[in-house]
Image (cartoon, rainbow, N blue to C red; front, side):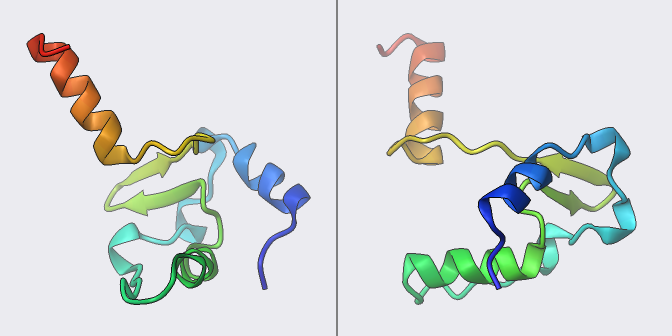
Length: 88
């Protein structure tokens, strides 16, 4: 079952310093079938991770923020690197 908008807002508001490490899913354990449609992959991720804003990576807790944009992470990284080396 997918979270409601209110539940997502509550998940987003969790303070990373107050997060219960034992309740977080380690990102290395998340399995996504890349052959599935995007909607199915998103649903699978949400079901596995429980909170799409907080996960563990080994001993670290990671907090994600999502932008309302068509740019991919790869696009952003290319733009960043291009600016750093003076291509743009």
